[in-house]
Length: 346
Image (cartoon, rainbow, N blue to C red; front, side):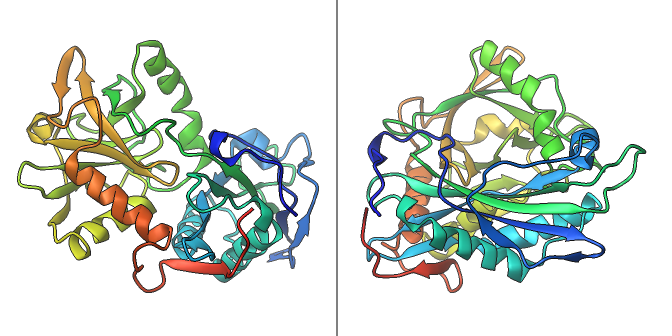
């Protein structure tokens, strides 16, 4: 059924769709899981997620390609990352094959909400899980709920991707042996004050340094970072306290295999950032967000790519990866999970 949605005017926000997936873990096993039309979650007042923030999440998208297929981009990577996160948080991991099956079920059940090809909009999927039974002592929950909902979203940037401004804050994002490498809800909770403070100071985001020495670049509150050197090498920070972004790993592959560029993951010191010619944030929502400047306690770094548009190499990376996602460019084997084909654009 055609949905009465103005796809071109969608923002990046929540819109209720018809179905979502729910599975519960109890007595040592996950149940079969169901699709439901009920978007509410009912919990005990002492549920582990409410008392001790025992929760994690993922984010991925379904796209309508140029040839009419509906696909998801590398859902196996999200499944693996959520499995790893659950283990770190002492949660019952949701099986990776069932994760992918649940993604397919949710997309198929909400096909009419997958925006048309060329609209700039996509269907965003949010898998998440949390401790659901009553816990009062500081210990892991023994029962969990896994859910996926879907919502159509517009492009992260309206009117094009204008370069943004970052600041180096006085806050730390993750401890050296903490949870920075997993997608735990608590990582994002602690970043909220810092991002509000950044916005109040006129910046779009924070660029965090390593907590141990505060000399090396790590990531922002919600995205990995890539830099481009003057000789067009792609460089990204290497650290065991940053989240392994699926978009970033895909971009590094695209740089080498599609664009013939050198790509390197290594420690990057803040003192060398001024030597790069381009900078961008990467993640599921926007793919690439160009950065025009970084301010480190009054010291301003302006990238040669400027504050008006994406740098040349960043634009090539963006065009190539989105071309793969939308079916305009042949994808590496296994990158696109086909959900449906010969679909009618709604």
